[in-house]
Image (cartoon, rainbow, N blue to C red; front, side, top):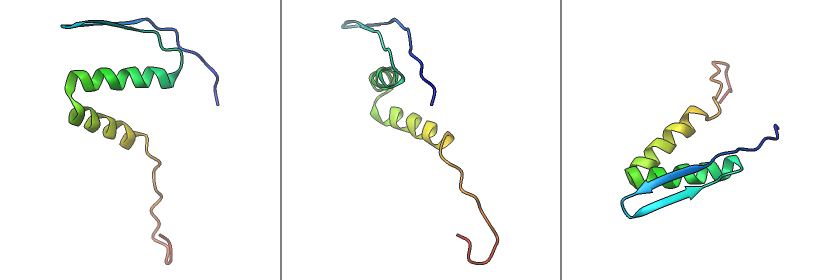
Length: 70
């Protein structure tokens, strides 16, 4: 597993004000991205997008034609 850090300064302007984020890990960056996605597109649209990402990186199953194989 690689060890790395993220250096980012994210500023978002909303009608009701602004937000600033400084993620330092991939997990923090993901939480910020999901939060922004839900605020901008809504929960169902965000869920659909995230499902597409999970499908893209899902482990591929091996299909075998051998008898007894699943």
